[in-house]
Structure formats: C-alpha cells, structure tokens
Image (tube, rainbow, N blue to C red):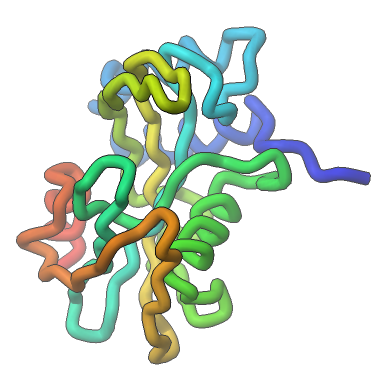
Length: 186
C-alpha cells in the first residue's frame, strides 16, 4: 500500500496543538485554514494560493541553528521544502528534506524537548512567481520542527538545490518568529 500525504485531519491536529501554545497566532494562519477546507491537497506544490511546506530548525551543541543557501530563493534559510506524496506526516517531511539537503540522517537528531509532536513555529510567507515552473506568486505555510544535533555529523550538501550552509547563533537566525521562540527557550 502506497503511503498517502499528510491528511487534512493530521495537519489540523498539529496546527491546533501548536495554537494551544500560541493562540495569538490563529489569525496569521488564515491561509492554512482556507487550504484545509479546499478540495485540493494542502501539501501539493500545485495548490494555490497557499500550500504546506516543512523545515527543520537544527540546533548544534554551541546553540547555533543550521541555515542552508537555497538556490531557488538565493536565501539562507532552514533546511526544508515541499512535501512529497510519500510523506505521511509533516514531521517526517521535514526530516526527509533535512536529510536530502544536508546528508544529516534522522538518527543523528533528538527532538527539542516539548516539541516532539508540535512544531516550534508555523510561518506563512510569500513566494515569488516562478515562470520556469509555471507557478504563480503564492504562499508557503511552513511547519518548522526543532531538533538538536545529537550526534556529530558532517553536512553534505545536495548541490542541485543548495549552494552552501552556515551555523548561526540564535540571535541571528534568519526567521524573526523562530528567533523570538528560540530566545524564549534560551
């Protein structure tokens, strides 16, 4: 039996668990709730105006966060990206993307305490149109899962999608919402 992408029930349950911790963010997730009541797969990269993506906030022993230089955007961001049809759970999609982009396997990670089943952050951000992929301007609803690097592991970049990487202190993490949540943890 072929695994199915994350169900709307799974996405809704994860979102509600997240909002139980961050109730003031409900309004900012309006595009996600609209995608969840649509007849289209909310995890498909062809669902517009918004679809779900997943990424990993990876923290090393020096309390730095891994950022990769994504070729598509030209930006240093957390490793992550689009869901694949075989990704049954959002967390698994984030782990797959991390492994693909950096070579770091899930076995080298430890979930951030208290965030085993709840993302550290859910962010909605705009994506420019991409005529090469026939994609209009749209939004990503990015579920950001937090892990510690539990075992020392070298970063081996996927050169098709990633140009470089940096470990950044919490205070200079690219995402302001992640930066704020990491500051609360520290």
